[in-house]
Amino acid sequence: MYAAVTLLGVSLSIFVILRILPGDPLVAILGVEGHARMTPADRVRIMADLGLSDPLPVQYVRWLGDIAAGRLGKSFFRGDTVADLITHRGPISAEIGVLALFVSWIVGLPVGILSAFKPNSVPDGVARMLSILFIAIPGFWLGMLIVLALLFWFGYKSPFIIVHVWEDPWTNFQMVVGPGVVLGLAQGAYIARMSRSCLLEVIGEDFVRTARAKGLKEGIVVMRHALPNALLPVITISGVLLGFVLGGSVAVEQAFGVPGLGRALVTAVIERDIIVVQNLVLLYAVIFVVVNVLVDLSYAWLDPRIRYS
Amino acid sequence: MRELLVEIARFARRNRLAAAGGLIGLSIVLVALTAPWLAPRDPLKADFRRMNKPPDSQSFLGTDQVGRDTLSRVIYGARTSLFVAFSAVLLGTTVGSLWGVACGYLRGRFDLYSQRVMEIMQSFPDLILAMAISMAMGTGLPAVILAIAITRIPFGGRVIRSVALSVREMPYVEAGRASGASALRIMALHVLPQCIAPYLVLATTHLGVAIVIEAALGFLGVGVPPPTPTWGNMLADSITALVPPWWLAFFPGLAITVTVLAFNLFGDGIRDTLDPRLSPAFLRMMTGGRRA
Image (tube, rainbow over all chains, first blue to last red; front, top):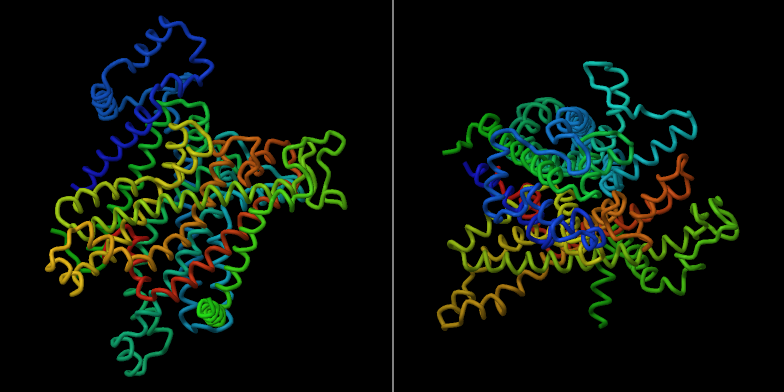
């Protein structure tokens, strides 16, 4: 319920940002010079064409109606509809996101556990330094360096025409593996940090002492008793990190030259293609909100003590 | 003054990494301030006799496609990047914190609605919100600063609100209320001072984030418009070449990484020192206020 209200607020803020802040949307689309060159008649015609001459509340309600009806509009400069963009490029970005999530857990969790096993040991120190480093490195720069290194030493260039996984899995994999791993490592660093501190907190609790006192092996104490109790905050942060993945993927896709949804958004922003920007930004926000609702719901399932009314 | 130095010495002994981070951060700030004297060449001056030169004795970090000196551009880039990051964090975190104080102290309907609004602001991935705002306002230095600042507001709001919530229950605040002080007076004189430590922690933590967002905006071509040298713009310039020269791609990114690393280390140290209790609050902030 809250999520629905939030989403309504999200759509309203996008509308306010893109329609009201700049004053004249035509200036935003055509730039100051292009706008000055137009005759008043042109102006009125184009505004009417775009549906921009109606009162703002009418425009807003119509936009919501369009979305509800599945009409996402089309680019001002090209023929592509936003729906085409999403169905064509969306899968690539979705694969990158899922791969990043997967990599972050596969790398982050074991590193965190390893750190918490022997805090302040040498492996722990190395792991912590690495996670601090990977949090600081901008993903798009790491991506650029990887692309450059591959090109320079191996003469390799990843495919740059969209190939979906159902057409040619191997080519598709080459497209998404770079951005996925780069984004995944940065999130993995946060997950390692988080799982380490949560595990250490849980390991200090009474039931862990009990488990040790009854003579269980240290491995079983940590993996079976402590870990499940430490995972909840790690799952939460993973939901929050999705925001970094969604935002970061826009820049990382650009660095790798992968034609995903993020690049479509960047192109639209540079060309000031308001309709496309409006709907894509909404899409990103909707994904973010929905995933975090799912994370919230997964609590009740993971931890029977939590019930939502 | 002496006491301050003793405090700093103690901080440095206890948090060596943080002290190193602070020192590096400080020197980068100094480099940014003294850029006109430090930079060997004019960062905007093209030199067509020296285009695409790898690092050599004349230009230590090489030159770009139109012969501009990379080292000078990285040094001047520090200026823009740090100016944007500092202004954005100062603006965003301050507005957010004041809002948070009001929410936490006043409670009630104001708090309820404010929380919803902040939740909506946090429903956007940072970079995407910043892109949309800076596009709407027309790219330029003020637009970029404001765009990044707006994304920082809810973080300040949430953390400081939780501090204000606990401070408002303290006896001395109650005493102030009992003696007839206005809400504004109590907030300004009694609640606000308690928020300074968490505010500093927040601000240093978010400096790194702001620098990365600024660089990403520049890299995507929606940041501070060229020819102003910023680290993000330099990275964007470098990939326009078919085979980008490595020095153009490497050094600006290295500058970003070192700066962010320095501020993050310093921020972690400050957090541990100023307010160890803040860590759970920080965690809640990261998780968007949900409680497990």
